[in-house]
Image (cartoon, rainbow, N blue to C red):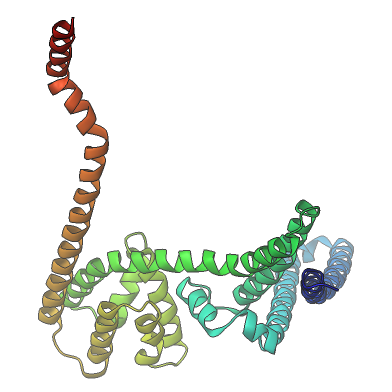
Length: 333
C-alpha cells in the first residue's frame, strides 16, 4: 500500500468516525423526539378525557371549563420544560466529553458568548454544525473528485474547511458585535450621565436603558438585560457585569463598567467623570475617523491615477500629439 492509499484510508476512517458520532447524536435526538411524541400522545388523551368530562357535566358547571383548559396548558408547558431540560442535559453531557472539549474549545465558547449565545443549546448546535460539516463536505468532495489522483488532498481540504467554517461564521458575527459596541459606547456614556444627573438610581438607569433605548443600543441593551437578570437572581453587581467588561476586549467598556461598579459600591457624583470620559471617547472617535479618511484618500488617489489620468492626458495633450504627428508625416513626405 502506497502513501496516497494509506492517506485515503485514514481519511475514510476519520470520516466514518465522525459519521458514527453524528449517528449517535441523531440517535439521542430520535429518542428525545420519541419521548416528545409519547408525552404529546398522553397529553392528547388527557385533553380528550377532559373534553368528554366537560361534555358530561351539566350546563351549570360549564363555567369551570376555562380552569380545566388552563390546567391542561400548564401541564403541557411543564412537559415542554421537562423536554427542554432533558435536551439541555444531553447536550451538556456531549459538551463535557473530551471530544466536546476539543470541538467546542474555550476560545469557541468565548466567541459564542460574545455573539450572545450563552446557553448549552447554542453550544450543542455549534458542536453539531462542526461535526456535520466535517462529514458532509469530504463526502461531497469524494463524489465530485472521485476520478482524480489528488482526491485525498481534496478530502483533507474539505475536512479542514468543514471543521473551521462554523467558527469563521461565529468569529465574523463576534467582530461585527465588537464594532457595534465601539459605536454604541459614546451614546451609552451620555445616557448614563444624563439619567444619573436627573436623580435616577443605578438600577432605574439600567432598566430605562434596557426598556426604552433598545433600538439605539441593540447590543449593549441585551447585555445589560442579561446582567440585570443575573443581579436580580442574587449575584453582585461586579459579578453580573464581569462578563460584559471582559468579553468584548474593549478597554473603554471595561473602564465604564468599573466606574459603574464603583458607583454601586460607594456612591458619589459621576456626572463630571462621565462627561470627561465621553469627551475622550468622542475625541478618540474623531481620530479614528480622520485615520480612516486619510486611508480612503490614499486609496482614491490610486483610483484617480488609474482611471482619470489617462482620460485627462487624452483630452489635454491629444490635439498636440496629433499636430506633432501630422507635422512629422508632412516632413517625411
